[in-house]
Every structure is written in structure tokens, then in C-alpha cells.
Amino acid sequence: MKIFLDTASVEDIKTANDIIPLDGVTTNPTLIMKEGRDYVQTLKEITKIVNGPISAEPVSLDAKGMVKEGKEFAKIHKNIVIKVPMTPEGMKACRLLTKSGIKVNTTLVFSANQALLAAKAGTYLTSPFLGRLDDIGEKGTELIREIRQIYDNYRFKSQILAASIRSTDHVLEVAMMGADIATVPYKVYRQMFKHPLTDKGIKQFLDDWNKLQKELKKK
Ligand code: G3P
Image (cartoon, rainbow, N blue to C red; front, side):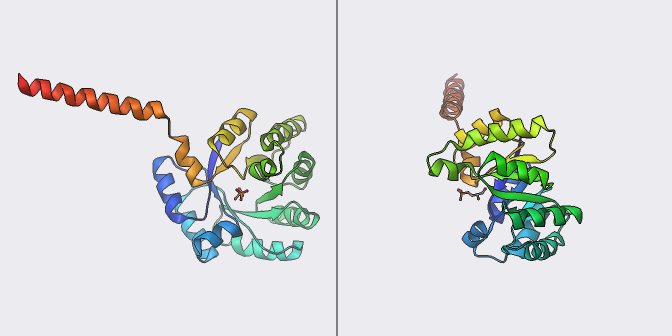
């Protein structure tokens, strides 16, 4: 499973990418608002760090506007992927952008039928939002299982990008269910490295090493 970072923080992207190269990045208007920076400039910087798909999101609601904004974003770098919402206008834009050689990430997907339609419109990435389904009392990760089955049944090439991930359990579940990609907030990414027994083991090895050095000095 590929791991993308779900952030517009260039600093966090740099830090994470120095540990293990990231497979891609997803951004959206909310994430860029948190950083309070210029969107295009931020995307330019991200493309210099990460060698993989980087999603940029237009704010137009009509297909014509999405295509216009999407084409501008796509000029930044060949790795830019354009996000469109799962609406009829979004799917129109998906077809037009795909036809002109620009890859699309269909966002705000909350049902398997929506994912089916996105695949039929030729989307490159399909983004089911797990955490937001959990928020309304549904089981977000179940959606990944359904979409996986549909995409496999009909050999759709669109990749499932599990989004709105809130915990390391989400990452584990979507990996078990066969998502192609998980886009993970930086905080969850850092938590994935952690296990109390790893910390305990390091401490024990260090304590024993120091004990040995003291004993050797005494001899
Ligand atoms: O990946 C989409 C993400 O940015 C939305 O996450 O936590 O606002 O539902 P959240």
C-alpha cells in the first residue's frame, strides 16, 4: 500500500520524506487554510520534495470552472493530480481533464455507488472519506471493502485512496482491506512508528550497555 501525507505543511512533508520517501501528498482548501500560505507556491515547493502524485483542489463548483482551475494547477508540475468532488459536474470535469491528459482524484466519496461512477468517469484516484463516515455513526472502513470488490469485479484501473484517516487503526484496517493508498495526517504517520515495547527495548539495551561499560572500567 502506498502512503501519502495528507497535509499542506511543507515542513512536515520534508521531515516525513527524509525518513521514508513519501509516495504522494494530498492537499485541500482546509489544509492550505491551516498553513495560511499561497496555494500555488506551496504546491511548487511540495513537487520539489516528493516524487509522486500531489493532489490540488479547485474551488469551482461547475465543470468548466474546475477544468480551468485544474489546467492552471497542472502547469505547476507533471505530478499534479486535480481533485474534483463526487458530483455530476465533478464527473464531467473528470472526463474532460482525463481526456486532456490530466489525472483526477475524485474526492468526498461516501458510498460504493459513488466510487463506481467515479471509476466509470475515468478517475485516476477515488477518495472515500472514512473518518467523516465514522463521525455520523457509520463504519468508514467497510466502504473500502465494498469498493475493492467492485473495482476488482470489473477490473477498474482507478486506485482507492483511503482519506479522512484519523488513527493508526484506520491505516491498519485499510491496508488489510486492500486500499491502494492511504493518505495520512502527519500526526498519525508519526504514531505509526511507535510501540511501547520498541521504546522499552531500546532503554533496556542502553541500560545494559552502560552497566557493562561501568563494570569494564572497574577491572
Ligand atoms: O483526506 C481528506 C482529509 O483531509 C479530510 O480529513 O479529518 O477533515 O475528515 P477530515
